[in-house]
Image (cartoon, rainbow, N blue to C red; front, side):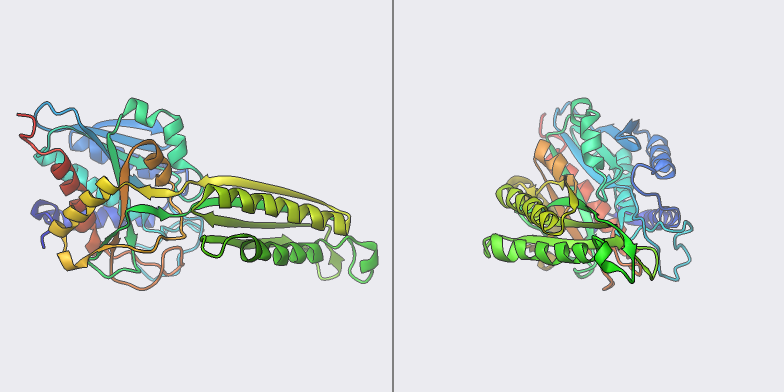
Length: 390
């Protein structure tokens, strides 16, 4: 099944853009170089450009043929992760502690490919809003753009987004109607104990011991409070304390994340976390601060837009490789916030390679760039066909 010939024709240029973005990664709300490149490319193709939404976000506006009033948003995220890259690629990250380990450089490039194609052909009747979003990785870039008036300034009747998927094979496209990705809370727990000499533990209120007690106790919340038929995850991902071999520290920090598909379960877990920490604080006669932050909403694919993705995918890749997922992902995605404001769909494009995203050895397969760009373009042509309003 064909990707779009015209997009295939400039695939090498897309690869060059993607590798340049990869070599110069920028984390959330620091995407100054990236957004500048996006804005310059869009402008060069005759697309109206608006900068500064959500600090470093960019929106391109393109009108097609005819007088159609429908408006569709296509969204790509631009930010990298604050982690080291461990590959030997010629285009590997040139910035220490910054890495496009989730493929957002690919998403940005795919949407640029779509924008170039649609600007050249304008084979649609309506308006496309190309939404280049900052800070997807837990910093609330979508919410920041919405707060800045994204959908008031650039109204959309529906929105679409995508993600690369090394857990799928090359040429596979997956869409899951309904709840598709979990809501996420991030949390920080700070223990205020009392430090002492390592040889005199009786004089301390040992923050390390308290932290390990908290960590163990929190792991009982899902297993002993949440209905086993409800999906939920509580993961502690950081513990920080201490500075010397012979000093019992007085303070410790625990950080982590909670994932759920239900607001009731989300509230239950947060309530139990605070109760458990209060009980342990009383037991050890210390103060424990608990900060739980709503970071991502549940991502819900609407039925109508999911069917559009499925139908379009069957024209871009082998129909046998178009899958309707049956199991939601526990991962989270802040495009969910845009989809709470506007109906839409979010899908996955598979590619070669088995290393997962967020791994220091992750490698994006550039062969999927024309697939993602073609998917977005065909969605626009299908939903806003020329002649539909004649």
